[in-house]
Amino acid sequence: MATYSGGPRRSHGSRRPAIRPTWCCSFSLDPQTPQSKPFSPVSKPPSLTSRRILSPGRVSPIDSDTIDSDQIQDLNEKRLSSVEELRDAGSFRGFRVRLKGRESEVVVLTEREKEMICRNSEVFRGLFGENLNRGFEIELDGLDGFEGFKATIGLMREKDGSEMRWLARLGVHRAIEILEISFSIMFDQGVTSCLEYLEAVPWTESEEEKLKTLIKTCPFDKTLIQDIQDRIDLNNSTSSSDLTVHLIRSITNGSNLKARKELHSLINGILSNSSIYKKDILGLNKEGIYSICHSILNSIVDSFKEEQPQLDTISSLLENLNWVCEILFEKQMGDEFVELWINQSELINLHEISSPMVRYELSRVSAIIFIALGRGKIHINGEKRFGLFKSWFRPMLMDFGWLRRCSKGLDMRMLEENIGNALLTLTLSQQQGFLMEWFRVFSEQGRECPNLSRSFQVWWRRSFIRSIPQN
Image (cartoon, rainbow, N blue to C red; front, side, top):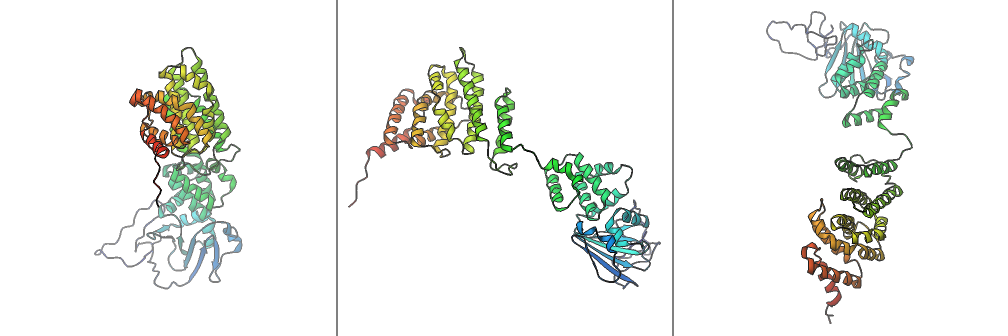
């Protein structure tokens, strides 16, 4: 095996260094071995020529000893960051590959391995030409690590379908490195094996991103990477907005309470503005979402009309309606829902004759609307704001105590504050009518009714306290 001396090493007495065992390729060097004389890069070799491959694979001859154009005509379409070849006609008959980078590791191959790598790699076959009996040192700059190149050479030794087992032992991360190196040195069988393996195994998110970047930067054969691209890019007519509506409809039709809550969280995460899944904002299918709202409202009315309304059924339907309502408000698409809720005259009449234990769930929907209106998340005109209070303010006063006892995550302090904020957006005369009604109910029921004292004070100051004009 050929050796290389990168510089002087300390002597340890008269002991000669033992020959290190190798697996086929030796990835370390001894300065002296019985097989060869030392090769020193400091001394000028008897016959030295050099050649360099520059990214993305162009060959720039420096002297008359050049590679045939037929051997390198395919290199312009390939990617190899930088290769520098040094030929020494002296006693060195090995084949050195130096990875320039972090630690400048050195790979030394035997004569048999030199033939193997030339047989598998068009780049190295072009560098060596027909003369495989001379010493070479090749520097590679830009490859992704020593271990990856070592594994690529190991893959060349696998035959008869054992490539997949070799890659499976190394794992996805290393297989992506081997794929990049195989493409760089034009090791076609390595590229094919890596792509077949990667298509058949799962990836982590970091591995997926690395693979996507590699596919974008390297012009692989489309027939080889089609299956992998199909796992990365969705190329069909289904839009995310239509699919989201389908998922929301499936959840609202489900009967498993625990599963429904988990799926609510899943969809909320996907639709969130800060979601990691967010790519292109196409918006929700507004028509599809409102069709779900109409369907749920019809089911709620039918449930209230039953001789003995089922609390679990009504609670489940209203929970779904609240969830869809929150999605609409979050996406600033909830103005029409407010109008839809205002016009539920039949449901308002059913509320008046129903048991408080059942009807209070309706006020949970009103609570979400009042909070959104008080926080400025929905923007409706004064007529619709007045219509909302006219339809659902009195039911809220009646159900507030039940909501407090069974809040189910509803922030009651926020609800009180925003009912008052929303009320103050009406005209002063409209505010007076609703605040007088609140005053009467609050004086009878106390904390069973929302505390709108602050809004009452604001209304009183605006209505009856005039500032003294200054001279």
